[in-house]
Image (cartoon, rainbow, N blue to C red):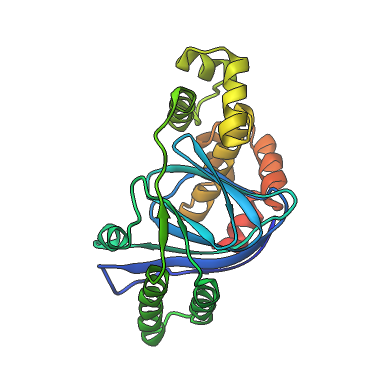
Amino acid sequence: MEDSYVLQVRERQFSDLYLCFCGYAQCSPRHSFGPAVRPNYIIHYILRGKGSYSVGGTRFELEAGQGFLIEPGVQTFYQADQEEPWTYLWVGFDGERAAEYLRGMGLGENRLIYQSSRGERLEETVREMLRHNTYTTSNQFMLEGLLYSFFGTLSEDLDVMTVREEGGGSLYVRKAVEYIQDNFCNPIRITDIADYVCINRSYLYTLFQRELNVSPKEYLANYRLTRAAELLLITDLSVESVALSCGYGDPLVFSKAFKVKNGMTPTQYRRTRI
């Protein structure tokens, strides 16, 4: 679970660059998100504590003063540390020139991890965004200005790291993740995944633990439940339909698993998060 404050922006007046959502969270030990594929860009910045970020078969151990970029359409997973769980802020955005602006700062593609000493100013900018939480013309312009301010602050001393090339083990993990992404709505088993990438189940387990810090079974379950959470937010599908769409033949089993992961039932999640 996490103690979080979130602003969702439902309406927008701009096209080049616009805010989708932002937030601030103090996470509990091993609190995780994903595996998930997001429709927009998200920048996270770690204020305190530690955690890990996994993308493209590569896992990064990160701490306060560092951050990571999530790109649209890319599978990611991140998790708070057991001993020193992180507190972080995030800004979700998109726009016709979003990728261009990121490239101008040195972020994007295989440049996803960064370091910045401007944490206090970034935190204050996000907190100011959270204060403008009603849809008025004034607030829309204020949020747009604050988004550009966030980019300006971040770019002052941004130190970007490059993602290393994948090794052989990472290739197996990436192919396994692609299989899960394409087939999670079906009643697939871990042996099906291992057979697809042509390795045995034990070795697949070892690779997932080494590179993603979860077992293939946990990864599949997390992916299904994360996709279910997204469907609950962006569609009007019934809970039963969401369960079936995410590979759960029994809605009751789905509801129990969802509550274990998110601390609330699917119905409660939809009611409180929309």
